Image (tube, rainbow, N blue to C red; front, side, top):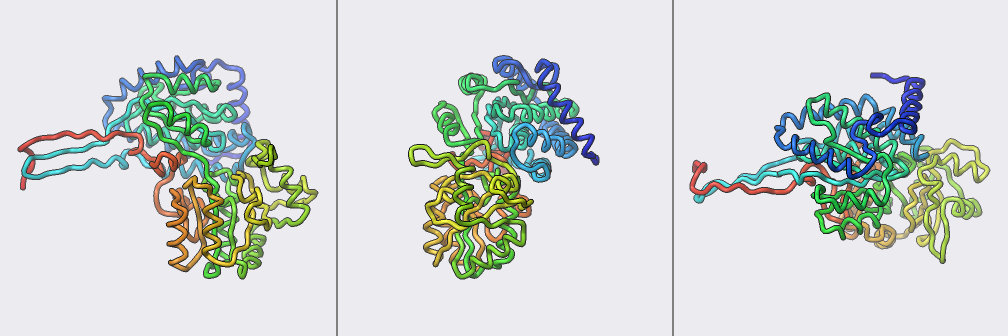
Length: 463
């Protein structure tokens, strides 16, 4: 269905108006005034859902995909309007990616073991009700992606969204519930709270109804989950470096890095955050970046931009949250520059905060290096052991191999924009919960299940 701009604007205005004025139970399906009510509702729905077949699960998931594609523009615009972060066009792509490439029930693969002593079958079974904490950077994308995977695994879900993106996240909860009910599923299989807080998060984590916890956010959230005493999946922070050596297709590397680092204004945790370029190709790389939509600043402009984008406290730098996910043109305007560039680039030293801090802004620092050993050492240091994502542009197999072994990241992309690592232009499925800290990697339906073994002795084997 083609949605024109006026129609989208009207939908968003109506959604915001309803979110502000209506009672939660009336305005959005699955959204409750209290976490207690949400937990009771999802537990009841899960008890019904336990008897549903794989085919019924897949019918519900197919309808979630359908509604997500139909409302991708609405979700994208609502997200930008509420959070002030990102780009509508890129968020549309992210929702389309979630709808088309999040695995469903096909991800659940049983194992059969046969021999003289009979047959053993191992199947992937639900955990039950899963508690999920979602971020402000990808609020509706994470809700829909997690919902598909968790429902495919046979679970119910209770969300505690980021307070700064709860309207968008809860609209996605409503969409998922509408899709489920339309497809013959139970009401409130996916739930949330109208006004999420630390208290609602603590209640969710402590509830005996919740059997598993999943968080997509910063290291603090992950640490909290890991101390809960429950099975926990944590998707933490990253500061992905990209290396460009002198065997690379430099023109393509420049284009790809601009595409990846500017995508949704550098909000994705997989995006290129700093670049280490061989000195003998650095000028060519910068020229390619400029031709593909980047704007180069230097000298005093870099220092002025640092004061805008970062906050210094006790000698340490952190991001200025007011500028996270903003358009590059807004930063440039603050510098007195009129440009519609997608990405700001600059040359810095290795220890500059633009290199060492995960910016989540369309700002990319470029550091010149003289060897692959120097590049790898700097890149590994800048990644800070998050083991999240890293990227390289090179045709040298030894360089590719050495960097991959040294950085040990969950995602490693070679000769492509960073988003190829989650299936956008690269092979493989997508996810918006990338669990580096707890080791599950790119989560999917199998991540939200537990293995159960069924044994038949001296029977059902035919050899």
